[in-house]
Structures are given as C-alpha cells and as structure tokens.
Image (cartoon, rainbow, N blue to C red; front, top):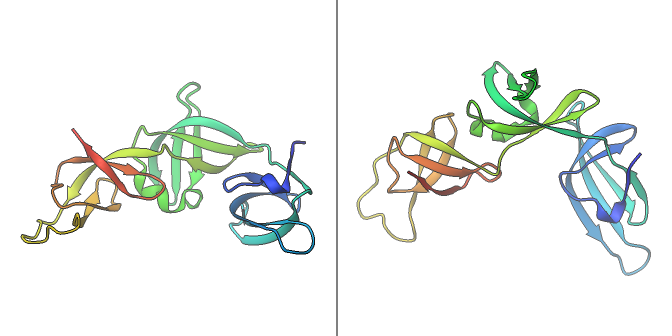
Length: 188
C-alpha cells in the first residue's frame, strides 16, 4: 500500500477514497490564520463518475490507487465504446467513451495512447500532448478582418472543431493541443 501526504496531492492522481478509486480533478491548499493547513480535494469516482469533495489536514496520509499504464493503439469507435490494441501482445480492450469525455474528438486510427488500468479494468485514457489533424471544412476568410490575429472555426477530420488563423484552408493539416483544443501550428 503506497500512501502520499495529503499536502502533496495533485490534480490527475488516482487515490483510494472510501475504499474505492477516485481521480483528483482539483486541489486547493488553504492555510488559515489559526489552526493547521488543509488541502481541499475534488474527486471524480471511477465507478460512476460522481463528483465528491473532501478536506484533509496536510499531514494526513492518503492511499494511492495502484494504477497501471499500458501503451495502446486506438483502433476504432463503435457506439459509445472505443477499441484499443496493445501493439506488443495484440490484445484488444474496450473502453467506454465516457472515460475520455471531451478529448474523443482528437482520436484518430493508429494513435498511440496510454490506457490506465485498475484491477484489470480500464479507468482512463491519456492522449499524447498534441495531434495532427486534417481540416475538412473551412469557411472562406472575410476581407478586411485582419486586426488582432483573427481566427475562424474549422471542422477537423474527426468531427471536432478548432479555432485557427484565417489563412488555414480545407485540406491542410494542423497541430492541435489535446488538453485545450488550441491550434499550435500548421503541418506540411
């Protein structure tokens, strides 16, 4: 059993809370004038997605969930499920789309991802920091709209939308940040 000091809890950690694994979605360190410092932690349940909040004293010990990372390749999407394959063993895994939330628009076939496992059950997917996607729909730029680095919304090959500079045209490839959805650059 690995434990961490509550004062060292960070966003993205998987911890055991009430005997079940939870993802830390937000932390807030508070040091009141009187009394000891506390760490306010917001959790998301891995089992049902429920949001919880708990306050620890910074010197308390919290159990870390034994989460295993496996590099897998995204294959395809079928309904509300995503299918990944381990490129070494060729084992396939079915992962609910709800674990990726708003990042599903950055999944393209053969994309290498990190699937997170807890007791042989997929609990999350880590995407690479950025992906190259093709622009499939781009409105024409408007003449005269050139002040303050103007941007326009384009549709990408996965169906996701992104704000890009107005010089980007249909058919071009762009580099997109998977965490924020921001345009990072044009790819040749």
